[in-house]
Image (tube, rainbow, N blue to C red; front, top):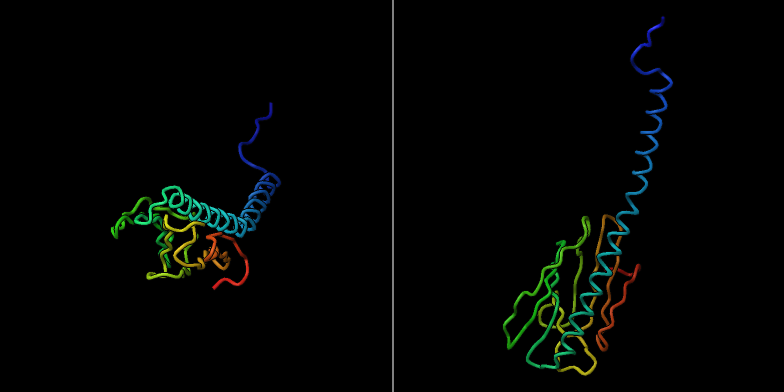
Length: 160
C-alpha cells in the first residue's frame, strides 16, 4: 500500500499564485472606478440636499426663515442649516463618501461658502449662484447652482 504524501505540488502552487495575482491586478484596476463612483454619489447627494433646502423654504414661504448649506472647503462634510430671525441652527451634518473632499465652494452672499434659500423668493432663488468642486484623488466634479432659478447641475469640466 502506498501512502499519499501531504502537501501541494508545484503545479497546484503555481495555479494558486496565478489566481491571486490576477485578482490583485483586477482590484488595482477597479480603484479609479471606485473613486469615480464615490464622486458621483457625493455630487448626487449634494444636488439632492440643495433641492431639499430650496423646497423647504418654498414650502414655508416665511421671509424670516431660511434654509441653507454651509460647505467646509478641505473637508469631507457639510451642514444643512436653518436660520430663523438671524439665529442659525445646524439641522444635519452630511458626510461625503470615503475619499471625497470639498476643494472649492463659492456662492454670492455675505459668507461665500454658505448658500441660503429664503421663503420670500417666488421661484426659490438662492442667496447667490455658485460652484462647489468635489474631488476624489485627481478626479473632479462641479456642482453649479444657477442664481436666478436655484437649479443645480453637475459638470465634469471647468471645475475651479
